[in-house]
Length: 413
Image (cartoon, rainbow, N blue to C red):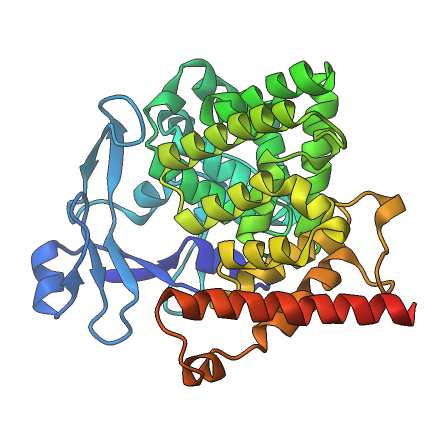
């Protein structure tokens, strides 16, 4: 039995990146032998084991061949005579098909080290096109490694286009699509992921909601140029990703192009716009099984866009109601993300950027949050308020302290 370090750990070590997880491949062994050594089996479709001490993943060397549609349509062989090279050959990219033995020697039958030096993302073999998930994986690697200058080999991009043309992407489950997309959104340059999917023709198959938003913008905002629309989406996503690592905010910028949202519109148009946007977001999140916190943040911004854009003229009652709506008292992160957006000046146009005590709109809202948060419920209870009257009195006192603060700020200026 021989054991080799493989995959991302080898790749990242050669790129001098930090290694988070180590994956090992076992050659010349079997399920029974690993179980005898106290390894714990966790894989059902193919044998993956956890080391009894380190708890790192060990997988038996295996081969695969296509037997159906989609990424699940494979037959797998993991007999003890499967070689290391055969196992590496089934991997997606050459830079992920490098192994390292216990003595530190590299086994690189597909020239992955060369492609690391050349900064090329290249498929290992023609079998690449058998797995549609690899379209997303390559796009994600293009995003995560773009800061190092990696590009996709032309022949690999052609295979990705072929996968799309053969409608293989239609067999991907929503959860798998979101898993790769979430990882991409957490990279330094998530816009690269979507650009690659656009180039190979996959973006509107995987994310038809984006195309619907484009059509929606052409109807309401007279934006007839698709390329300018997508370019603006990518530019905004790139910009905001350099400012925050928040998944919720990055997701919002993928689906909500502030530049194409109207500054002024009739109330009936506002309701119709919100209804369509929210419907698209709900459908998208349900289809891909996206977490509620991501969905809810996006919907909060869309529903309250006009309120936040005109925060300077909102009454203190409405502002406290908004803080209640987002449960700011127990969820400080929610209000901080909203404040971040407002201070980026995506919600408020430049001419209205400063107001009331010359503070930014987000800081203005956060000041109100801090002032009203300091109102304690204990004295209210001690004064004999009970049930719903406690909540009503708490609301009244919060509004009162905010009104006093705003009036004092105006007097000083």
